[in-house]
Amino acid sequence: MSARLVVLVSGSGTNLQALMDAAADDAYGARIVAVGADRDGIEGLARAQRAGLPTFVVKLADHPARAAWDHALRAAIAAHEPDLVVSAGFMKILGPEVLGAFPVVNTHPALLPSFPGAHAVPDALAYGVRVTGCTVHLVDAGVDTGPVIAQEAVAVEDGDDETSLHERIKVVERRLLVEVVGRMARDGWTVTGRHVRLGDRDRLSQSQPPGRPGTPGRPDTGRSTK
Image (tube, rainbow, N blue to C red; front, side, top):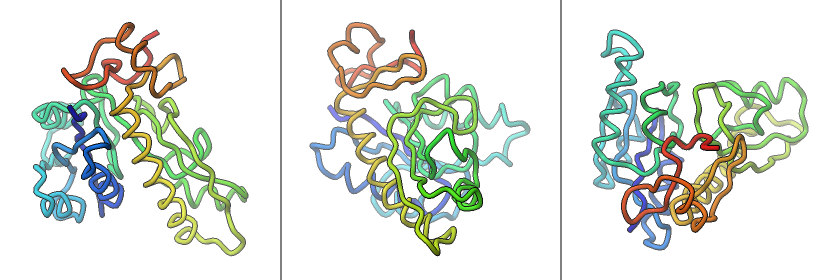
């Protein structure tokens, strides 16, 4: 059985599209069962709808407090019984209910822990680094502070501005996200402290709670279990 993915988006959904393209191959090991968003009228939702995927929208403004939004988002995600949630350009900080219920993977356009937050690319340019890149990481309660799964460097070229540098990072980011999610789906993963180990499925099945029947085992929250 393929692992079940819920993908969260806030914008154009280019990372979502990369995952959709990969999941079209049965050998990828994962399938997208729903796409969620925090706003209406975005291309990410339109991509999902054109592909015939279920979608849902949970707006922060529709709830009296952030905790109520977090509760509603958890319920909307849980309705699709995912094995893994992928934050693919989702521009809201996830709360404790969501993070306590599902493992969540995110991408960030810098080599964490350098340049966390929403302005990673201009921050890297302003600092004058010659190499930046992207990070795929598990999400925790902080801002871009979760355990790193994979990283890849991108050189800063003379004359780069925010747009040109970010476009090159996005190319790497999409490929790395697809690779990491596929490996997690097919082979499982373990987390020890801040160290994420992909694969090792046999050891995982012995030492960690299983995922949904027929899918790789995984830690219940995607965070440290030791």
